[in-house]
Image 1: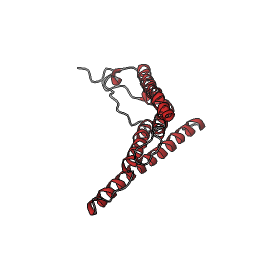
Image 2: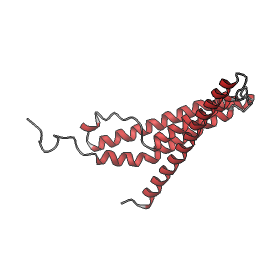
Image 3: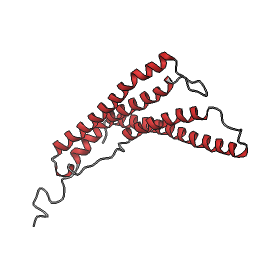
Image 4: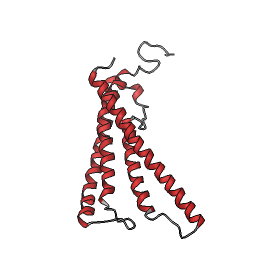
Length: 181
């Protein structure tokens, strides 16, 4: 049975994952519909095109990619190689899981930190997109929001990682001598 804090944490994780997934899905749908519309218009008449197509696609793609990273963290959908996990005692499995989540958070923080200078340069220099003239600084916001949400998601699911590592049953053939020749 979940206590109030666990229930609230899991509800927050579920809500954030649903929101990020919905926005990322809408970005993907927008990209697909806009691309099909642009191709169809150019097929009918080569001079017809959707003005600002590249800007729309780049901006939507950026939001989609970085929100998808957050959804991966919130849903614990990362790739796990648990070859060594099966042979380790539960304490070491827990330490391994905690170290993995902390390494992910550190890597996300490093990426965000490395984007601050170019983003501020884009803002200070007034960089704009070619077609629509959107400030290029807006593109950096998707990186910060997506990776920040991913780091928050990794922290929020850390208790689930610990409990799963502690609850994993021992591998077959260990403990009571079963399976030995």
